[in-house]
Length: 261
Image (cartoon, rainbow, N blue to C red):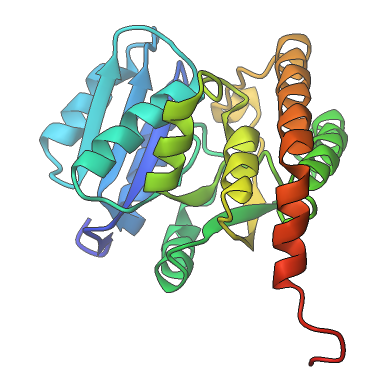
């Protein structure tokens, strides 16, 4: 673990729910790239919290929080963000526990964030043949809605959860309303941060969909989660329409004068 970069400002946050043994490989890969790494076990029933706590007992760069009941990805991330803010951290990189996200790019994303601390650094997914076609096509719809809701703020992908957030504005956003606690977290977080003027920086990153034989686990349910996303976009469109005059004024204020280069 000695090769991992160590930071007092940027922390890696990994929410985990019934991920199975693949979470151990994910955490080891994250720790090989960065310290500290915080894992939030969101009411898992698979027993992995015991193995994770044992790993943390031997590794000062790893923290594991175990929540008593499952409350959703957003709630688990929010738990970590509030604790990280109280501990003095300013930025958090979130990544999934199921092996989909590239731990080897943690350092690059953190460096981009350190160079642009007022921005959010968002992964732009590069899909391989393992990606389910239905999900790839479905995210195009969500991305189109996000582009509308932010008046073309430049968010390349609203669903890919490998990204670095500035902690303070995101915690303030989440404290102000009751949503963003489940699968709706990733998209709603970037839209609401864009409304606050947090600029997106998009960085290419591969995404892997592991098969069951590789230990891959997915809790995505097409009916349930697409209904959740539909309700989320209805809320966001309403919020967009309410903010539209202000968003247009801000866009015009940033436009260079006619004839300027």
